[in-house]
Image (cartoon, rainbow, N blue to C red; front, top):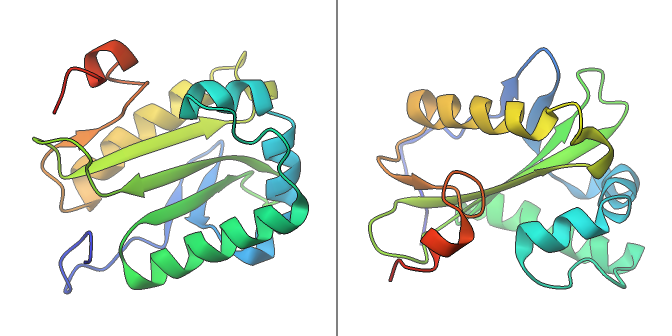
Length: 157
């Protein structure tokens, strides 16, 4: 089932002075894998599990292909966060169907661990909130572990 109405034109990009968002695809394999593996400890906090511990390049290729297919089917949307010149992957954004009542979508995002000290993840989060309010058809977006801390998120059914 589509996450967005059939007539909704899914945004191809989000342009920002510090980064660009575009659909994550298998063509991002090497740069994505490097970003993920350089940020293992941070990602385990984002997902609250052991991923990406032990992730291989081949497994990452499968994941990227799955994300790409879901994007095409409009059931979820994964965007890569890249430098404006696309020289490096800076993180990712995932838009999923809601798992809790009261929300239209769940958004998870991360910036590579080396960019946390310079505030990139917070800047990404602010840009995403504006983007979803102005460009997407959702009325209530959840940002588990970010806008809603995990303790509050866990209280929702």
